[in-house]
Structures are given as structure tokens and as C-alpha cells.
Image 1 (cartoon, rainbow, N blue to C red):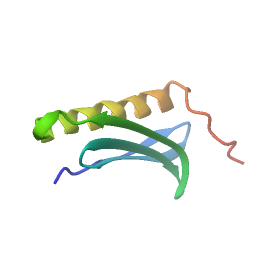
Image 2 (image 1 turned 45 degrees about the horizontal axis):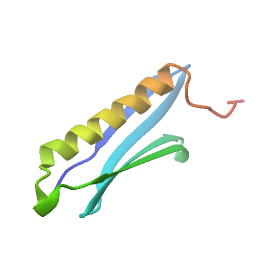
Image 3 (image 1 turned 180 degrees about the vertical axis):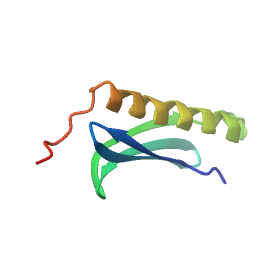
Length: 87
């Protein structure tokens, strides 16, 4: 079993939560969500075809997850994620 990634990050005085997980057997789907106060603000999903006869290792899948998780964190900090106005 591959565990996911969870990160709380402060950005512009607000706390956001980024969660990444994988699912699937023949096709691995890596899903990353950005939350604010329990509301999903962003969802990114990437699908990977596993190599024949299950040749893809847990380490490879974990690397895919880590890369996508880091990208969402970087995009948030860089202002590339459209955020609702906080009043």
C-alpha cells in the first residue's frame, strides 16, 4: 500500500491543505487536491499506464505522487492557482 502526501501551507495569511493519493491497478491515477477550510479549490489528476505484468514499482508511483504534490504547492505559492477572494 502506498501512503499519500498531506501538507498544510500558509499562503497570503491563509492556511491551505494539499493532499495527494494514488488509486487504480492497470492505470494508476494520481490525484492531488487543494483545500481551504474543508472546501476543495483545485483537483489535478494524472493517469499513468502501468508497464506490462506489473513492472511499475511502488517507488515509481510514489515519485509520480511526490512530483505532482510539489507542483501544486509551487503553483499555489507562485500565484498560478486561481483562489476565491477571502473577505
